[in-house]
Length: 593
Image 1 (spheres, rainbow, N blue to C red):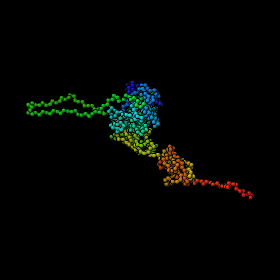
Image 2 (tube, rainbow, N blue to C red; image 1 turned 45 degrees about the vertical axis):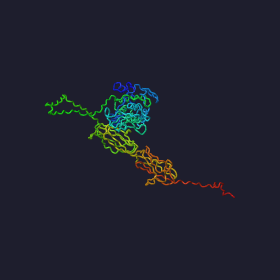
Image 3 (spheres, rainbow, N blue to C red; image 1 turned 180 degrees about the vertical axis):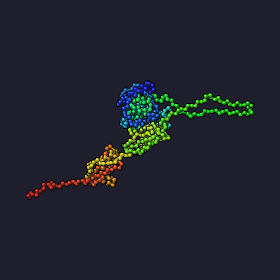
Image 4 (cartoon, helix red, strand yellow; image 1 turned 30 degrees about the horizontal axis):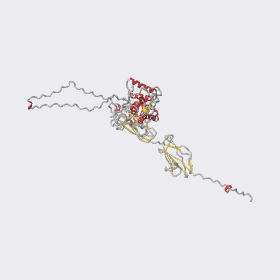
């Protein structure tokens, strides 16, 4: 790509002015409030939480290199568009986004408007990061499903000019079993993708090399911690959590504002690729090789005189002249002071009790861990990542399955409150140190099914039906738990033989299945949000008497409802009319013959 004036991000006054203008323009476009001002109340506990990647080797990319090309000086016209297949000029290529890549950004933003409406994710932010990280998947080099045609990898993060992140995925994503590398069009490092990955195209896989998956994952990553991206402070925090660099923040804001002013679709594979990267000019020092000790020549052996030397004495070797200046020992390189994370040897639990909650309820216990040195001393200001794993829809408060919290002065980090979903069973919560592989802590949590502790019929009228007929009123019950409506509670209804025999009766009242056949036991019923359940209509066969309907909720609460079937009334046969029995008038007995 031909270089454009002003495209490379520099630290001089010119680029600073451009970046400042872009930030000011972005801030001015945000509402409500004055540009650059966040008028929201502080979130409780916010000082103790830290987003992934706001320092050290964290972040979505592991602070990998990125493209530093600035947007063209001339902004695109708002609303401009070019149909796929239409030739575009060089400037149009810069402003355009490959069709599949743009579709992925827009679909990710649309999904987040539903799943996290408070985040206010603009697709232009995803486009800006996608351009800075990979040049829009290297100019749209993706197939029809959004998977990159060639693997996009950052340099290996071996600590040699970059962050040090030893391999975390066995090379599954980056093909490197020694060190991690940023992967795919949004440049996720494998350790971050392991918990942040999403399936954006509905194929059942989470692939960092797929632009739909990567864009949705980036959106969720930027929307965590309750950030509202319509507020400048949260927007900046989210971007810095992706790559912790002020230059990176300014650059992304520039591209975001550029795309806000207008863009258009270009065919896949026709986009340009940026030319300049943030690691240009970085001289990576090769790892030193082991040095061998200097080779010394052995001292010459003294000559042994013999009769053949003519009586001449062999002179002794001249000793080497000492160096008047003794060698100066090398100055040891000072060891940089360790960070709090470097001091952590292991995590220990803080006495968290049994983690059990009913479906839909909040767990009463909070998960806590303590960061300790090898000798058991607490370590403050260490970021702890709590991750939910297993077949569960439980989340932390705020709807996330991953939360990062910094340890307090006592070395303790408390996970956000856990919220049970509707799936019952066990799942695991893992606490681990961010940026360091040390022994973590696992907890098992259990979600039990919803139950009711009271059940009552809403009506009071007796339920009576004639044999062979149907009951006029349907049975409705209300379930409660601790006095409150018990919604979504599983219920069974069975016409039992007696109070002591709960097996289904083979005669008397019955329900009908979908084909109209009699059934006397129903399962799979569930109360509504108000705890109410209306049973299907009941019918009666020709057996009369009193019968019992037993309704049972999850948790064992029961209600027995009596049903009465009466004999059908015998039809009344009217007395015959003598005048019409023979078809002719009856003779008048008073008449004379």
